[in-house]
Image (cartoon, rainbow, N blue to C red; front, side, top):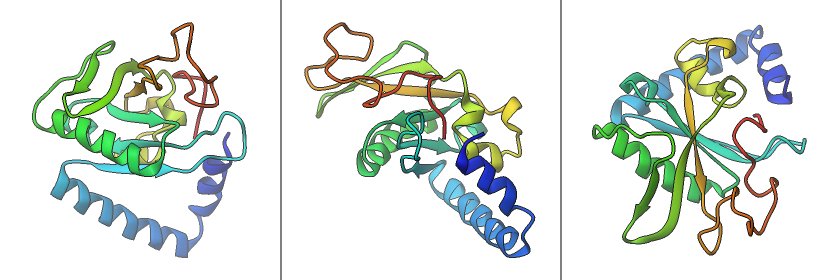
Amino acid sequence: MSVLRRTLFRMTSDPRTLAWLDQEDAHLARTIRAHRCAVQYVGAGEGPGEPAFGYTIGLYGLGHPELVVVGLSAETTHGILGRVAGMVADGRDLLIGELLTWPEWDGRLVLEHLPNPGDVVLGANRFYERPAEYSVPAYQLTWAHTGAVFPWDEDYPCGPECQPRPGTWQA
């Protein structure tokens, strides 16, 4: 169990924490109503399998898996997730293995199945009141490194510390 999950578990019995979580839940619901989804960014943890990442909350309510990006800055993560989530909110159904590009952006993304969403999308599961073992589904948006090289390519310049493979990391 990650440090974050243990901390949240311990905190939920404190009345002040419960009041704060109620306010956060109300704010999140307002954000999702106004923008169709929200982006949650999580800084890197202390362990090697706890990288910085971000994910959407709200796409599951539109009938689509949530989206996750790992190993990028908060600003880049929000930009990518906002753009791709907007496509979903506008009716686009994304598919595993799909390559996403835009004319004005040099980046490339590939959608991959995230096999352990219960260890990653904690806020989405809280919002939809789902336990980790019955987590909302999620896709990991795997990004191409400099030179359009993906983690599965032989000449990928950095190891899993740069962008861990789906299912090998957690919140």
